[in-house]
Length: 143
Image 1 (cartoon, rainbow, N blue to C red):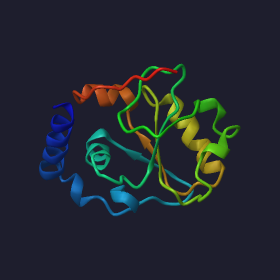
Image 2: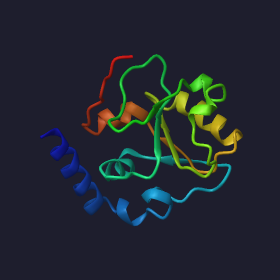
Image 3: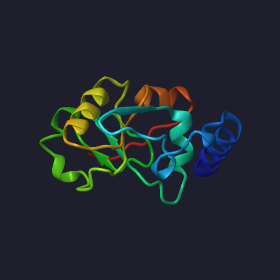
């Protein structure tokens, strides 16, 4: 039932927000410019998460762990991204969507990713706080 509700919300947002028209980049993400972090909002991200193959890596960088957006692929502490770079895709053109609770830690992490040479780096504006403000729930797993 929860999956149906997320799907219905994603369909609504895509149909009525115009978000579907702005997707010109890889995997439905907005177009990215090499060396720049692209902000992405919940309204744009949500429809992409319900796809069978979303086409990007969703990374939680918030410490300490405080939950995650459903569909998160990787947890990397924001202050250890360079140290743990081996966990990231070897292809520097791989799209990476990064978030934390509010945006402060993800700004640090995305800047590090750009310095490491990643060319398609996205930062979820408002992070988990924005996700919850949109009426969406976080997932929790044992750490």
